[in-house]
Each structure stands twice: as C-alpha cells, then as structure tokens.
Image (cartoon, rainbow, N blue to C red):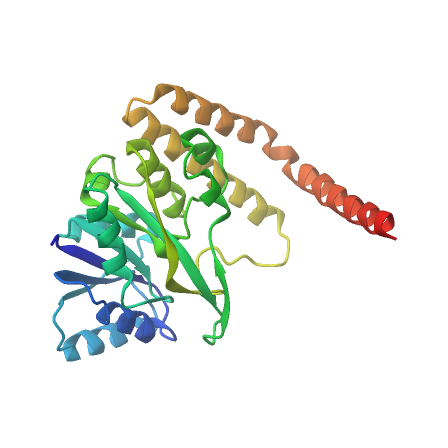
Length: 293
C-alpha cells in the first residue's frame, strides 16, 4: 500500500482546529503520515496543535510545524508539497473535518485506476460555524471536469479546496505555485486535467464549514476591494496559462492568455457590467412572475 501524507493546513482557527485534528487522527488508512502545518497563527491555534500531537498515541506518523512568518496559501501549499513524503497528498483545512474513511476512499480510487490518475476530489457536507448540518455541495466548476478548455476558462475551481488530493507526480510535473495565487483549488484541478483524467468521489468525505474560509466575502461593497478581487482573478488565469505552456499545450495557453487580456481591458467597466447583469436578472424575475400570474 502506498504511503500517503494527510496534510492539515491551519491559520488562526483556534475555535475549530481541535475537530480538524481529530478528523486527521481518525483516518482509517495506513501507512499514513499526518503533516500539520500552521501559517504563523497569532491566536492559540498552534498551542492546541502541539498539545494534541504530543498526546497522540495512535498508529500514524505525526509531524507538526509552524511557519516563522505568514506565507499565504500559495507558499504554504508549496511548503507542504516539499515536506510531504507520501505518494499521495490529501489536503485538509483547519476549520473542516475529514471523515475517517476519507483517505481510504481516495486510495481505493487511486489503486483502482492503476495509479494513472493524479487528482482527486469529492463532494462536501456543508456545516455552519456551530457544526449544524446544512446541505451536500460541490463546486460549480465541477461540470467542466471532462473538458480542459471549459475548465481552464471557468472562473470556478473544479473542486472545493478542502476535498482535494493529488499525487507526487502532479507536484513534480509543475513549478511551485506563484505567490500571487490566492486559491490553490483554482490551479490544481486544472493541472490534474492537463496531465489526464481526474477522479471524482461521489461521497461527502469532508464536513465543510461555512463562513470561516478564505473565500468568505464581505457584504459591503468597496471599489478598492472590487478591483483587487478582479486582479487576483486575472492572476489565476496567468498561472493557468503558464501551466498549459509548461506541458506544451500551447493552444490552451494562448486561449487562456487571451481571456486574461480581455479581462484586463474591460476591468475599468466591470462595475457597470455587473450592475447591468443584476438589473437584467431582476427584470427576468419580474417578467417571470408576471407571466405566471
């Protein structure tokens, strides 16, 4: 059986990190390396990590570390990929909970496909901040899992980041993430597709906590924050462009470069375009209601 690294990333998640670690310790798969890495939290997150890892008496190998400075998601993922010794790397977040069978199910798919697939993801059971069960969800981008072109042009990731797993081959086939990448799930799913088919596990393997992750948005509108978000989105396409070129898929690379250029050119008009779209949606809703009456 292949050695697997279960990588748990944390940052200022003292309220939820204990449950996340318990989920990691509960994994039924073996041989398993549990790698818990904290991105220089300023609260009690790492204190809890140290206490729980020191008290752990289970069968898994457990390693924990704390970054000396806050690296951000991209550099943190790069570090995790360097430290992991497993043939497979399962990714977990410090505010979510993995079910005990998560790693076992992923390895089963990996071996069942003769180790030819390099990227895996699943659905997730959404929970509230207090742990209340909500609904089972997938990323809107999951419908593009069979099309490299649709996936690379989509504004959505193929998977919810907390459900991802990838192989050492996928890591070694590409350069480390650019520090400008704000969401690794926007990149690794596409990288998996660039190497071949990817695998969806049709079961919620993760309890995904709503309202505490990197994608949580503020409700109040800010022009500065709006344009900053658009710039971050453009950098995602830039990374996808570089990755496509790296594996010599030049046509895809040119197509995604054109999309990034178009986004740059229309960026000054984004607020107006968004307003028109919202007005159009309201008008369609009103017309629909009138037709029903």
